[in-house]
Length: 281
Image (cartoon, rainbow, N blue to C red; front, side, top):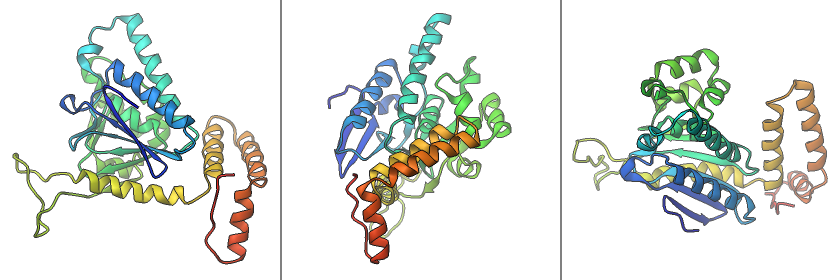
């Protein structure tokens, strides 16, 4: 697919979507958000895609937030429309029936942090930075940040980040439960020493980082895509209802799983002490 602000490729059953505005630290303008929606829909309908990785181009930024020049022109009506459109698109990411992984390679601020939170799983490079600094601009998060952050890390910690605008490290984000894992990958020379950039800082090994993310993802992809979808659906739907209702959803999907060829293959392989070969049926 051809986009102005995204790079999109499919390989080994993984669709990789890169926000491609490195000179703007991959900030989200309206065109980029709309293209992201098209890319997510394409991945959702593509039977060859079993999982999605969203990341940023380059080694400085995942997404540094919204395009402030564009944002600054909003009045109250345009501002609400801006938020609603972004929420709808980020909801499409969280509702996708395939695993969506955020590979956070640098700044994940404002809309970038909200984009990461819309994904099902978040893996960060050790140099990544997280935050919702919107209060410093006289606004609040508008792409779901005030709702997803408390659900991920708890109300008290979320409120502290939301009303202080504090930017935190990848390690702190991991400690809070905002990210699942942190990877430490740097470009090294022939002696194994980190290569420093013009500012004397270590240079992120972007490909090495993505390789680590894909290694984690390979574990998920080794299972049948049908039951991965069922597990995502059960957890997502159950999160917005009572425990009893959630368990009914789980039981229904458990029963459906028992009708699949993958269920027969998985149980047979376990009994026969061999590796299961799932077909997604």
